[in-house]
Image (tube, rainbow, N blue to C red; front, side, top):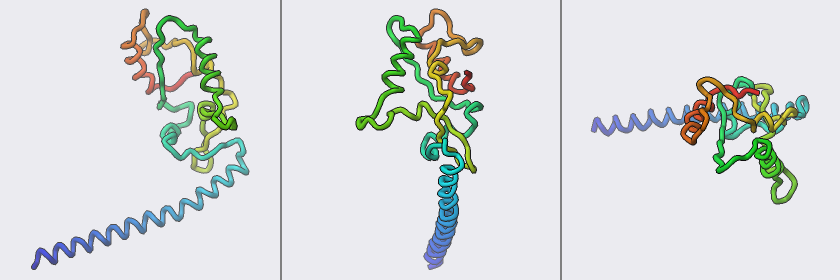
Length: 171
């Protein structure tokens, strides 16, 4: 009999905790959503150069200012033979950067040309007026721990790339 009362008491306590938790969460959401909507409207008026608010997985990249960020996405491509950097950059520009969607009304990879900026506590996408693909696709010239040996093999690239994901991107 006593254990049944104890079990019922535990259920009641758990129920009270859940009600308080949900009520707190609901209150938080109801208070922040109007402010968030207000920030979006004010951003459109005061900072028309800003795009949409960063809300998805991309928000991980905006935890620090762009010039201080040490969180990078990297891709390395292994090509048989030799391809000049200028040729690769030109192909990337034509096939990726200038690729339009099926309707022809917007670029598929438009986010590649954008950075982010902060406004009233939120992070927004912002077109980069100084975007230059030459900064991103270039000959590798890091020295020291990040230097690549000559000749360079795939295992060297893998070792260096894991270290590069944690350093500040330099122009």
